[in-house]
Structures are given as structure tokens and as C-alpha cells.
Length: 298
Image (cartoon, rainbow, N blue to C red):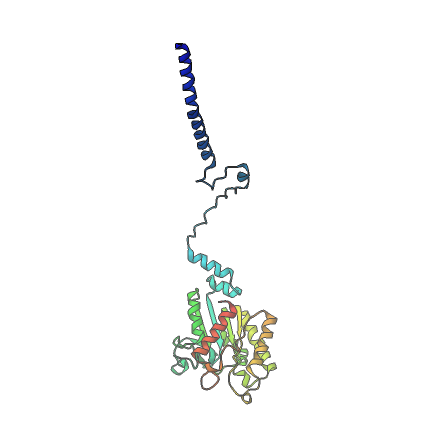
């Protein structure tokens, strides 16, 4: 009896343990499932399919080089985008001298701050033919395109800038006596003559004078820049040839010879002339400078 009773007790204990074992196994399986599922980490692929579509790691990006001189970099970019070789040389500081050869519009007559230098006979000499005929340079007080250019040039390394604008002058006069006016020349020589010629000469005579004058200038300059006369408000009866037609003559010569041509005929609006209808005021002169800058890419 005792043995049977012991076996019965043992069997009863075993039956009581089975539910506990089953519960334990179920619990283990549940935990294992949670560990495999990772619901809190959905960004990490856990299946072979996910692993195949996972993006490759991006290659390391090399840091950009440090620019030691930001100003130099900006200047280099300006040179690369320069519109003309002249603009590139100016931006690079390679131009040391500039000379403007022109009439009263270049001299700045009619602009604010203008004073006639030839009345006082003071200032830099811009023309001397050796016979006593001498002209002097307009002071920097004139608010004219030439002095705006002077300031720009000084900021870009130009140390010798001469505004050889003479009131009432002609292209024919430059052709007759270029040595007295241009002298030894300059790295860059601008020629802006034709406003006065339009009242006296036709296109053929003007073209002949321009070719002769520019021949000399070309021999004494690295760059020749020709600026057309502006279309002023003078009535036609005062003109032999409109300024616009003389601009066509200059464009043709520049195309033939490779000179830089600035077409300023329409640069000045009617409201930007003085009462004489001939000389631009300060705003009109500034408009000429804008035209020059845009054309040359300065």
C-alpha cells in the first residue's frame, strides 16, 4: 500500500506540473517572437529581401578647399566672365595708362562742377602744337563720364589717366595733328569725336579723317576704343550729316580693323540734355558712362 500510494503521489505531482511546463514554454516562445520582430526598430531591415534593397552607404565627401583670399577668388571670377580682353586686363590690374581724346562732351562741358580750364590756363596740358596753341585738362570737379571712368580706373591700378577732351574739337583736327594731341599714347586710348564734324562734313570726308587719325592712335596704344557721337537734339538744318550716320561710319571702320566700338548714339535721353540740346547734363554724361561700361564689360 505504501508503495502504491507513493507511486500515486508521484503521478499526481507530475500531472500537476504539466500545466506549468506548458505555460512556461508558451511564455518563452512569445518572448522569442518579440525579440525577432523588433517592432520598435522598423528602420532596420531584418529579412533577406530588406537587406537586398537597403541603400549602399554614401561615399565619403572630401571637404572643400579652404580659400585663403576670398577677394582674390572674386577677382578671378570677374576676370573669367570679363566681356572683352580690355575688361579682363583692367580687372587684373594690367592697364597702367588711359587717355581720352574727345570734344566738349568728353571734357564735361554742361555737367555739374565743370569749369573751363583754358580760361585760367591751369592744369595738365593735353594739347600743345608747339606754336603757342595749348589746351588744358578739365578738373576732376566736373561730374562727367570721363571723371567717372577716372575713378573706376584708379580703383583698378591705372596710375596715368588723362582726359584730353577739348571743347569744339573735330575728328579732322585729330587727323591733322595727332602728335600734339595723342603724344606718346597710352595702354588704352579712347577716341570720341564726331559731334562737331556732323555740322560741317559729310560721311566720306569724316571717314577719311577717322581712318587717318585712328592709324596714328593704333600705333600708340595697346587698345583702341572708339565711341560714337550721341544723337543730340539739334535741328537737321544745322547738320551736314546726322550724328547717327557718322556712328555707322565709325562702326564700319572698327569692324574692319578690330577696334572696340561703343555705340552711344541712343545712350542719352532727350530729358538729359542741357537747354542747348547739344551737351548732356550730369545725368546724360553718366548715361554715356553706363553705355561704355556695359559695352566693354567693365
